[in-house]
Image (tube, rainbow over the protein chains, first blue to last red):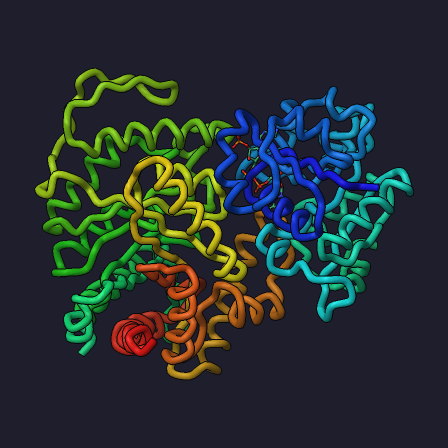
Length: 208
Length: 355
Ligand SMILES: NC(=O)c1ccc[n+]([C@@H]2O[C@H](COP(=O)([O-])OP(=O)(O)OC[C@H]3O[C@@H](n4cnc5c(N)ncnc54)[C@H](OP(=O)(O)O)[C@@H]3O)[C@@H](O)[C@H]2O)c1
């Protein structure tokens, strides 16, 4: 049972996800890179009910932890606190923020696989990465709503992808499990699933 | 007529209406692209017309890529300054992180002199990053660069000798910077996207905020406006008027505007998307943005209605429409400026008065 969601990153995506998670009734602990006092006011006003905490605490307290920080900063993730946890990777390599891809990730693997090798004792699932944050905000809708959009999920362990699918559903999107972590390539910038804010059927066609 | 409208409403809460452009490349009647030089002269003509029609501000962006002609906004504004009377001369935005705060101050103080106090600096991140390698900065230092340079720039605004030390540029010891402005202080605002940290930064420095709402529903920003107010109160800085900057396309009829906006926004979006790995812009996306999102597309009446809605939802006191995105025929651009000044602005004022 997921009760508490930890979010690392209190920027555009982190805050948007905190809003959606609060709306869905989860406890939320969210952290920026530093002192929680720095983000306390933003969180209080933008995502009422969510708690601004230090990153270690967000990692420890989350039953599931979403990574929503710039990919190139991944080495600052509190790795030990994430041991044994299911971790959602919502990060993309974004040239405008991260600089050249090869400076952060080896050429031949996906960013999520690279993250998994950095977090060998956590279970990484890629999700909530392909949709822009304002679309995440605008398009979240209750299950069964007309025109509901889909979020793709990629992960190696079936049970984990199902847990994430359930979470995605409660946050307001139709989940679509597209396969193992490696399949996350389809969701990276420059690939067909990236930027997709479309229905489950359409997303399926794009990520096959 | 528009100028008259502007006068009569002066006593009420004065809402400012601006036009912003990045100096996109217009086309002529045969669809042939203007040179960069001609594109710049086109913007000057448009600004002159906007000034005549009583538009409150013209903002020009800073980009360093082929699709846009303006890389040196203050120079273009200086050209506009000497041929206009009332219009405020702004940037949209000045990429301070890859610039030098002392130079930025000097250039804007100069512009302020040429325009008799009409210069306005709008600082921001901007959504392009070509300026970083071009001027020898590392993108990964972005936050440090911006943080430090805003701090120094803020100090310079007092127009007194500055002592400052940091990591990102040479230290200053009692450095006095010229020219001084006649008003004693440059007008400065900060362009903010969806980042809460930027909202708080604006409050901390006492800068006005212009929200760049370029995708999604404007309502999404209501909590950010609230955040700004809370932050300013907590920090004891003045709560200043909020502005909004969003793209639009105005033509005589909705159909005409929709058709031209779609093809031009698609050109623009897909050109940018290619380098960022976005899929092609879809008509569904476009329709959503026009109906509920942040595109102001249609006849003057349609656009006016939508602007009113945004102004009310966010309690905004300034609305800047980005016009001419894509490769829009020069006469259509000029017409758009005219429709905005002559019809949209007076109609928005009228609608706001009615309610
Ligand atoms: N923007 C989008 O539409 C979008 C959509 C999908 C996915 N993404 C991905 O989501 C991630 C976040 O993007 P964003 O647009 O939200 O960026 P953002 O607005 O710049 O926010 C990044 C946040 O990460 C924090 N951070 C940095 N290092 C951290 C650490 N070690 N632990 C906890 N927090 C840390 C930053 O805190 P400080 O301010 O204290 O440094 C900041 O709050 C990126 O990987 C991006 O590619 C973005």
